[in-house]
Length: 286
Image (cartoon, rainbow, N blue to C red; front, side, top):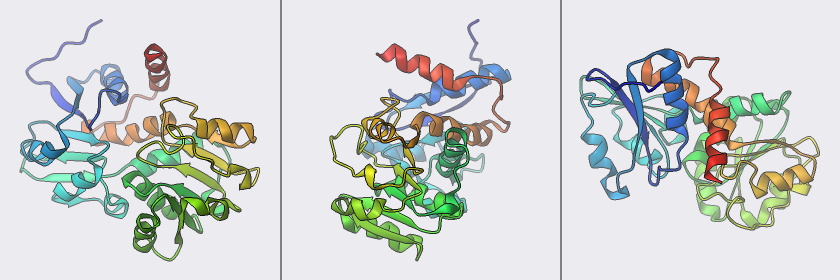
């Protein structure tokens, strides 16, 4: 049955560039339908140079809020009038809320999504058991570092092609974080409890990099935030080595749950198989 959009429909969405690939509309519109809310969740893709003007034009609650994805997460945080502690720690926003008084609030629930995905697909994983490795130095990496430290990881090693960018994250995150260049990955992977690909460009999914995952312990968990393809070459390499893996689609779904609550003021309907809907959408893409 087709759902009607009315003059009273609440509008929310996701903003990114590009954004046509996003599965967030699939997830949120399925929950909207299941909850019977008069609302719609749509994609927005302003040119990168027009993002700030786009956001400023939404002050006063023209729409209720947005999920923010690449490349706007860090700029989105700077545009907000109020930020949560987790958004400040991540140095990026993945939710912007537009208030009726004209102010903008920022939050970041990527960390909740990351930890939720690990709990769902790697039962028994305990971040306190050993060092974590985060690949990348963008907003997603910052969020991963912050969430792992908050969850009790004793040490987080940030690995990036440009060492200075990894050092920036390590310096801001504190003494329990250290930086490695990409050619130092062998040292970074030694004794790792978890290795997470948080690169904005899809470090191992789009480039044939020789990452020494065989240097990780056999019980190390390997996660990729990318979900196109669902099993990236990075995860495939980990699976060949017998490592437990966690995919990026699970993280997307897990961060969407608190996003839905922030945007629409109610919990996501628990009986809607949004992961299954996303898998169907991915299969349709070929």
